[in-house]
Length: 156
Ligand code: INI
Image (cartoon, rainbow, N blue to C red; front, side, top):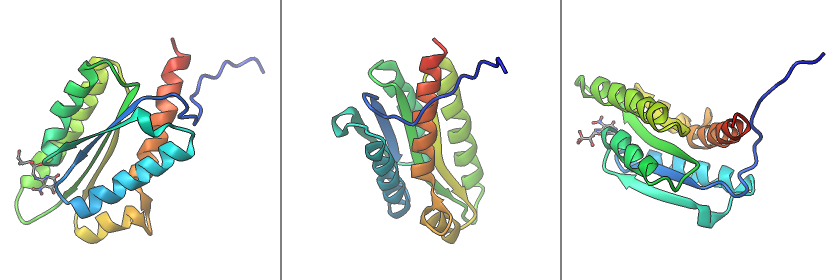
């Protein structure tokens, strides 16, 4: 076999990462943040290379990611939030905008922006994905971010 395979490893050594975390549903987003930091440190990331940027809600995440990317100081950005469905269509507007906005920043700025924003039908589903029975979206998306940053370095 002579197939060339390009992929990223899971070393966070020397990587500079910004976490953009929304305060809305803080009891969930704080758990996502904890999970993300834990993974970064376990993969030999340095605390001093981690910056946390807080937004009011998930809707404000894309513009904040855009500004963070423009600083040119980071290898990657992890967006963390929790959009939980309520009785009005607000959920759909916020979740659509945040999803689209994050991927636009990533493509425009050519920097990995990982999607750690929970979009759930209820609080129980959010709790399940914030460090209980269905894992932790913050940890998972930090793993993806580290791998993607290292993959893109191999593509240079
Ligand atoms: N923001 C969230 O992060 N999660 C939500 O579930 C949510 N809901 O359901 O309303 C939410 N709304 C606030 C929104 O993100 C903005 O901060 C607000 O609309 C001001 O722009």
